[in-house]
Amino acid sequence: MIGSGPNGLTAAIVLAKAGLHTTVIEAEPSIGGGARSAGLTLPGFLHDVCSAVHPLAVSSPAFASFPLREHGLEWIHPQFPLAHPLDDGSAAILTMPVETTCARLGVDGGVYRREVAPLVLQWPELAREILGPVHFPANPMLLARFVFLAAWPAAFSARQLFHTEPARALFAGLAAHSVLPLEALGSAAFGWLLAVAAHAAGWPVPKGGSQQIAHALGSYFESLGGQIVTNTRIRSLDELGEAALMLCDLTPRQFLEVAGARLPKTFQRKLESYRYGPGVFKVDWALSGPIPWKAIECARAGTVHVGGTLHDIATAERQVSNGSAPDRPFVLVAQPSLFDSSRAPERNHTAWAYCHVPHASTADMTERIESQLERFAPGFRSRILARHTFSPADLERHNANLVGGDITGGAQNLKQLIFRPTRMFYRTPLRGVYLCSSSTPPGGGVHGMCGYHAAQVALREAGH
Image 1 (cartoon, rainbow, N blue to C red):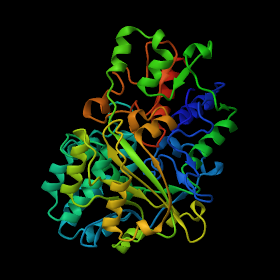
Image 2 (image 1 turned 60 degrees about the horizontal axis):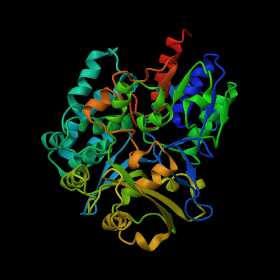
Image 3 (image 1 turned 45 degrees about the vertical axis):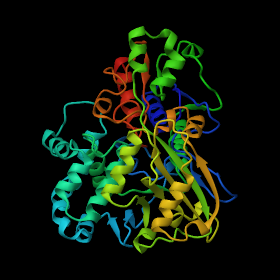
């Protein structure tokens, strides 16, 4: 197994459980890929390097089948999964009980209940369908109901379904996780998926940081007899000798680097044509106190979407898609130390935030991100003790899979959501060599399902 992100570790566990002697090889000093934590600012402050909040991890069928709690993984659920502040000092709130969210949405509550509540009731089944590989659905009617909502542009859905700005803004922030312009077909899918996940399972943070996900997966893998080797970068598949199976937690660009000479030219061209999406610019702060939100509900939320109205968010994401770094970006903020005291010294706090930027952008977004927080939390800057920034290039240096700062493993347009990275999905033309990164179905996110399905395919085709 090349790579120790959540997908690589999940695939390795599946192989080890099948009785195969399995070794994970990681280029960096620590395992985890996008699920790592580190002291980025001051002593005693623990920051999540990439992912911080994990709505799909807690709903992952793969993770649910592993005894990760026995290996140290503990989820913390904030009182509110999500808050979305507005300029008048109010905030739209996403709560786990659907009815509470509906009540807060006022005249839009009925529409929201009609669309979301039936999917929440069937979330385990829907999660299996959405997080599965391309397949004939076990429940076609359930999936059809979701697809009917999901296929539309998010901006169109928000304006057609909702009448109030809080409801429209809340949905726009959810849909902006797609890293697509909100006018793009299919961008609504991410809004509905994350909303349903929030109500059904929450948006938790791991106690002790995202690294604990990787540690739990790695510990369980080693308990099965697996071996992990770090600080070892594979430059060519030839270095691995005659391994019966090779699974690669690599995006197409990295796979071309290690396997290109052995691949048919036609397959090389297909991988070369794979499109990466926009990048992110990320800031971590050590703070002298909690973020001073105008809307007090935001202090009870693990995640806060900072961007204002539907119009504001759609404008920012459109600018990113058109190649410009927005002046007023949509900012995703996590504040785990409010709920996990292990993240910062007593009375201090951490905060984590990123905004979308064009692919491989060199723009420094620090001032723009902090201005957006000041917009909804006056006095925020006065609480900054230290900051650490990651540009798209910095993220790629930290984790080679984050090409141009793309944290989703490739552009999430309709074509690449279905045929990811090619029509062969996890397979390659090389015997016994498979792909299992977020560039394969079902795509980005800390859920391990790309690795889980790739390993199942590999075992089946190897006769296990």
